[in-house]
Image 1: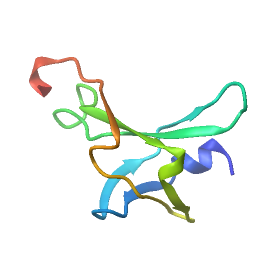
Image 2: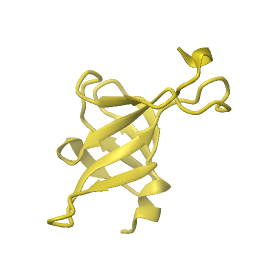
Image 3: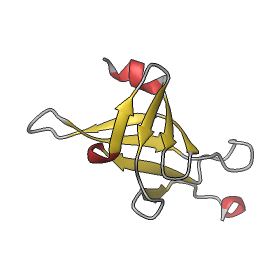
Length: 92
């Protein structure tokens, strides 16, 4: 499976059945070459024009299953690292 294949899959949290979005990027450990996390962009600010509110960084250990169309993850909302990426005052 390639990174392009992962980017076409939607990530769903099995704790609350919330759709987190589609895979945007993958984090790797440079020493081992192993995947350490999935990065899922959050919802857009003001219809997506001014960037993103946050992104979800989901550790590899929280991935339950990778299917044909979706990736199931088992994370509590507080355990998912959210990185704020929107810098406009309209999004805050």
